[in-house]
Structure formats: structure tokens, C-alpha cells
Length: 162
Image (cartoon, rainbow, N blue to C red; front, side):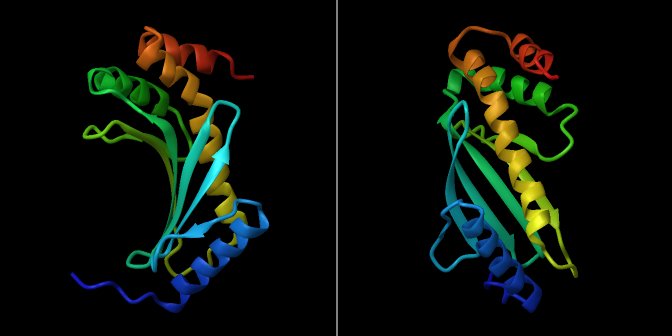
């Protein structure tokens, strides 16, 4: 399968993404010759690794915030239940877990086919992702290492909403 040649809209979107990330203080690093930036985010509850990607084959913007820990194999079913409970009702994006290695991430995405990807749209995709993962991270940790049930952990987080 050959690499898809980016169209003008995708090239502009990647340029807009890079400019937004620089100006917003994310200190992005482009990954090799790909349309992906890597950066970090310091939340209240942990340091997240983040990836912002322009899918040139689909004209889509994907943003991933990755948790600083991987779920041990014996805790992955409980973590999956926690994620399912947490995802229910989320309006922008979702939590995901790779069952093979235990990686937890939050994904937010936009389809901008035929449209301009603007700094405002980028902001509206990125910030809910990092804020939501940071918010749910302590609950995930109590499920993995603290003996709480997924239902208890999610109820505690969502019960603290204002």
C-alpha cells in the first residue's frame, strides 16, 4: 500500500495544526516525515503523552492523550469496565485501551473533508481530551492499584461534578 499524497487542504491543515500548537505553548515535535506531532501535557493528576495527527487519506484530525501508565494484564478487564462506565455520557471523544499492552488513551477527532481546519476547531478537540483523561486518571489508578471497583471509581469522579 503506497503513501497517500496529501492534498492542499491536508497540507494547510497540518500547517495550521503546527502553528496552533506552537502558539499555544505545546512545544510540538514532528514525528519523522509523517503528519503527526508529539508533545506532552502536565495535568493536575499526571503527565500525558499526546499525539496530534492529520490523516491525509481521510482529511481527518486525530488527537490522542496517552495515560502515563499501562494497565497490568490481570487488571485489564476491570480497566475495560471502568472505561466503559466512564465513556457513557461523554460528549466529545472517548477513552480506549489496547488489550495487548494495556495502553490507555483518550481520542478526540474531527472530519474536516472539504473544510478548513481552524485553530478554534483544533482547540475544541484537544482540550477536552487532555482534561477528560486527566480527570479520570485517579479513578483508573484506584481500580488498577487501589482495590476500588470500576463502578465506585466512576461514581466518585462523576459525583464530584459541579
